[in-house]
Image (cartoon, rainbow, N blue to C red; front, side):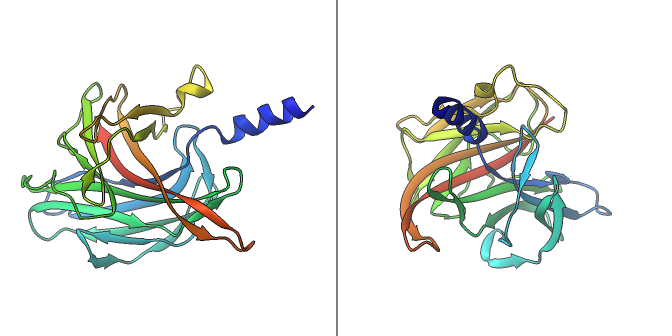
Length: 240
């Protein structure tokens, strides 16, 4: 019986939580359609199952530019949305600062900071420049002009320095009803090299999430105990 319960427990929690961050476009080119709609949720992207997400903060380009949020529902759970009206050509980097979530099954807090990058009116300079976040993925492949089958590369930074030998979890936002051949196929995992660089071929169209996981620090839970923090540097990109 204990073995059966363990297997059930492992199945329930084997796959990754992702702070999912997507937009209605990653390229703005029509001067009559300059509004970028942002969708923020805490889910299992491939399995399309949701979790409750407490109110985060969302910014564009720096923490000096905070955006308003509206509560919504995603996969039957509390989620959030925002929007931004682009008024000038440029590259816009949106990112989310969540409230840490305690995962009792793993006995740790989860704090994932996702970002997505939007180009407007043909100006593409600066897409590979960091925002200066403590945990961050810098795209090494232009992130707003991707096809399915493209190789996506990113560099993981921790305190501004390359994070070598770091696990990066990868999932497709599976709005297509795809079925994985096994649970192991749901969350792909790659590791960074000595320069903090990882590579992954996106074999399907859609939004892909990349989460570099670095365990560092502790937070106090309501039970009075201290628990470790899983810090995630995330980036979401769309393949066409």
